[in-house]
Length: 615
Image (cartoon, rainbow, N blue to C red):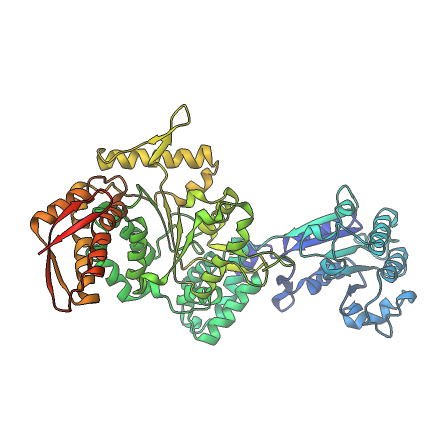
């Protein structure tokens, strides 16, 4: 046995709990991760077995003769099959000839009665797929109610078996229910029933995964060329990257690596291939590193006056590409590649920066998935994100968020105005930001480990005074450092005391990027860019060489920059009112021919409309 096997008790904890409880409990409800495989130490080493063989391996050592198994598909059967002659001591079950037909609940109750009263056979009666035994466990029909009443009486009236050969002889013929969830049995049947022990099987912890990973390293291509130290190192990485996965998934990843020729040194690619279906890692490509290295100038062309926000965003992207997001924690494997929280005044470039980042990473600014969180202000709108549960309308369509990540796991997810979402929906982000995973309405798991997540918010710009009146918390006259400090304070106050979700703020961490107000010099740059875009569009659409005189340009700038409180979007709105609308009207009524050279020399305010002067 290897050193790893000597140091770790490979017996599943739930199995140890079951063995300890056999002397005093006659029924067991086992739920949770029951369809996983479990390590079993045999004469030829460690094997990984499903739950039925694992149960038998343990109970046979206690002197049990066999397992009797029932499910609604295969009916009654004996495990292991070679013990049928032993099980035939129960005459009423007619097991010698075999039975594969589904039986009614009334007949099943009779079988259980004969089973627990038998003193000639030491066995465990396993009701497999017990979650499918009845339709609604909390709303039983008369036959179902009668069945569970009988089972409840059996649990209290069962007598211990006679000792058979050793002091460790089987004390009871137990009934074992295998369930998806503990709630799949009627609550009145479970709660307060001291004869029934509930065991919930969790996902394997890191120590268990490291043990299994060490056994699976030999299945990876070229693992024989590595030293023992290297194999242990990569086994540790394997265990770290598979947090929240089953042992069956670890075995599947090892088989996938062998099929796809993924070596142990690249175990991260094997895990990624299993989780998201893609083995290639775009985050490690040279072109992406170059794009981010050159990104400052490219983004600054689109997002004006936000050099500090741009630099901090690029730093977080560099951290993502280098695989160091969350590197200070012990569970980094599944977290999203990067998390950004854009906060600041309206119209200063938060959404534009998100588009720029998307274009930088994927070459197309439309490659991001945007969710306007004002549409998710109601509690029931959660179903739109993750999908409705089975039985509800639209459950087969899935959720918008989980569908987007399944289709393109390498993506940017933009959650606009996050503070407008219902608190219950915000709770979903706790799991996404911490573990990089989310369970949808149908129970399937979606992984966010390759996504960049961006939140935007206007928190901190306004606050409420003691009279509950909304007023400005920061103004364009405040220096950036003061704006940043005040906005962060308000964000922290909101999450801690208003939303009462400090844990969500903790998961966002220092990834809060504060945007500055649009200052006058930056506003002039934005105004110039927008005006040139209009002139260029007129030329492209109508072939007219349009220009603006210096005097008219100054006049128009004064009008459009009169109020900077709404940022670049406000400048655009004023430009639309004072320039684009009267220009459209003039071009509509004055039939300029293609190739015409036209200059705007001034503006006239007619009170009801702005009129342009041409020459």
